[in-house]
Length: 93
Image 1 (cartoon, one colour):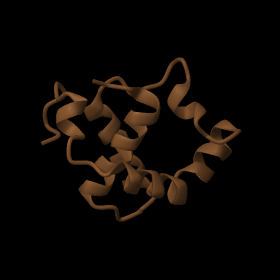
Image 2: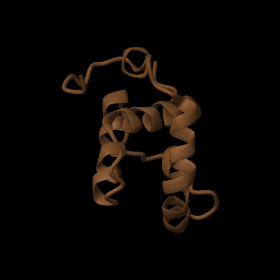
Image 3: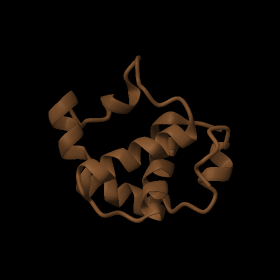
């Protein structure tokens, strides 16, 4: 499903559980991002030169963090987190 970089957020995140995504972010992401970017860590998502440009790129970055931190999330967890981040910060259509 993630092979195409042209997927629209509405298609990619249509079955996502953003509440579950938020819980995962609160439990696993905020401390790391806050230590890297200060404050509540949300600057990583809102900085001017952010790396993420597409919904698929957002899922890929979440997957990268999952792998690097050995969180052992399932693909649906990654999509849930990405959907929450999209809803809160990225606003891809």
